[in-house]
Amino acid sequence: MDSLEMNELFGRIYENKAVLITGHTGFKGSWLALWLSQIGAKVIGYALPPPTSPSHAELLGIECLSNIGDIRDSEKLKNVIHRHKPEIIFHLAAQPLVRASYKNPVETFSTNIMGTINLLEACKDAPGLKAVVIVTSDKCYENKEWLRAYRENDPLGGYDPYSASKGCVEIITSSYRHSFFPVDKYGSHHSILLASARAGNAIGGGDWAQDRLIPDIVRAASRSETILIRSPKAIRPWQHVLELLSGYLMLGQKLLEAKPQFAQAWNFGPRQEDNLDVKSIVQRLQRHWKTINYQLSAKDDLHEANLLKLDSSKANSNLNWTPVWTIDEAIEMTGEWYRSFYEHNEIISEQQLKRYIQAAKQKNLQWAETNEIFANQA
Ligand SMILES: NC(=O)c1ccc[n+]([C@@H]2O[C@H](COP(=O)([O-])OP(=O)(O)OC[C@H]3O[C@@H](n4cnc5c(N)ncnc54)[C@H](O)[C@@H]3O)[C@@H](O)[C@H]2O)c1
Image (cartoon, helix red, strand yellow):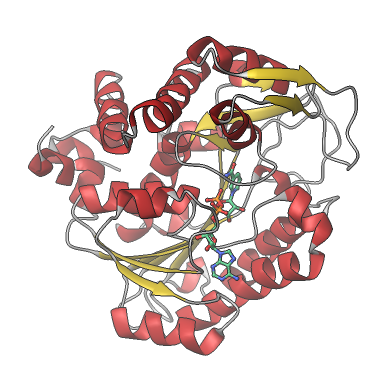
């Protein structure tokens, strides 16, 4: 696929647009920066230095206007937004880990909550800004260990500090939307559409975070060590990182197209059959990387939800968003990415992004359509 065709994705909406990603030095942010740069956006980043070494962002070396700063530094953040004048902001910067949040609750709450408030304050008088997508999590819901998947209008909550911080961020986002960017006064009193996105457990190459399943496994495999798997029976909504990014980008497209009905909260989770337990994920990953050795742990020291599923029917029907890869394909891509990295010193993110887009085209997904007339339909 040549770059011209790439630019045509998402109805060409991102071509030549200034797009700010907070958290561009992290796992999801670096994949988003790659995708946006490939489709012709001018990518601006704001984040702390890469949280891990190796770092996907550093390995990719994407050309972007990278600003290193703390999201809690309101003046610096505001200056960056005013200087670069993004038309859309994807807010991903956060302390994203449950176990780290038990160790550092104050940092987790201040980064995730005050960071989001600083961003939304800076948005109020940001020149040329049209759209903001706040990234929270499947963990923002009050977990009732329900068999059924959580919907957007289920109660928010959070047991551990990370989950609670993401529940708070949802409430704050809703408050700012009602108080400062109300949908019914869009176009007359303000010109910003604000939405939030709740996705599941992202897997894919380039993640080296601590205490996350896939990074822990690949770290151990790369050293030929045996890994102890915590909570093997815990069920999570696993999905390839590109799946949720396609959701964020579709949502951003609708907001940039000035469609106020999309300024709300959205779930972007996997198909119901892809909600698997931890043990099944490890077993499937091992099929693609034989060096993986693991032992299952009987219990866990810290509380984490056992059963967590996301219902994405709203995104399926209203946004026409749907996952592209099955969980087996997502795991295969993930295994292949890490093996290429550890065994051949190759970074295959760009190739995998192209394969993902090709698969979406074959499924006739609207965002992957390169015929503009079709892509611009509601
Ligand atoms: N990875 C997942 O499975 C998952 C699932 C649900 C939601 N999320 C959310 O997606 C977003 C990105 O997660 P990720 O997995 O890429 O995490 P990550 O740790 O790889 O990246 C986090 C990013 O935030 C930045 N950051 C952290 N603290 C900061 C601060 N004080 N000031 C400025 N920048 C700061 C880091 O520098 C990095 O760029 C987060 O909001 C996270 O809560 C992730």
